[in-house]
Image 1 (cartoon, rainbow, N blue to C red):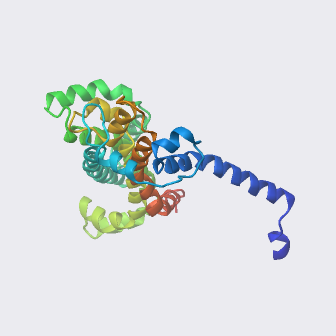
Image 2: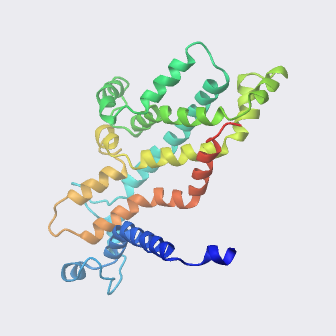
Image 3: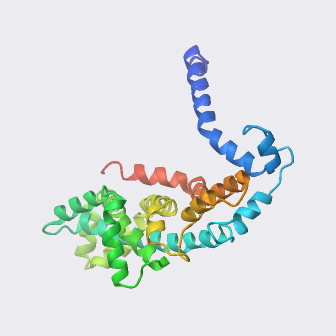
Length: 288
């Protein structure tokens, strides 16, 4: 029986071949980016995009990091990369923590109108970025936070709370109500139950929110270009400026290296914690 199941049939061969072709097609842009980033400009001009580097060099990576021009500044992506780091980490942590407490309240401390609040938060998940730009700009201007990293952090926290609350609420409804009721009978209050009962069970869903929020915030361009000042722009805005800066010959190898540098944090996060993301999603898939 096992031998029959493991035998390659024409149908299986076709499926494997099709999957291989799809994978190669999907990975082709990454291959072009990597190989181009290690090529010299001379080889780029005379060869094809599929050629391997004849004399691999990391010069383009050095220029992309600390020497390429992003508009009138020629400091590379380095300062903007660290802007993104200083913006993304606190926004991810704060929005996930607020979403955790909100989800805990909506799942186990229901109050009059809680369903209305939850419905409003769900609607908030589908509000386009463009709708909140003017109100956000007005508020940031009133509080003196326009064109600052702090302002960008607040924008991403506010926009992300709807998503994190939804994730945590759907996860916490799977926590047996008996655990919470038992803690209440023992005299535990709101925060004690959260700290002693709910929080220790929350690692899978925290990983989901961390990865989701990190990806959304790091890759965001619209909020960064609208609310980020000259010294607070994230790496995505700098990458756009670098690619669209005209200073003589277009350095495709530098552009490719810069694009990979901008994508490395999210790629690395998925490689390291991707299994926790899937585990966290499936952990809240059923109740019981």
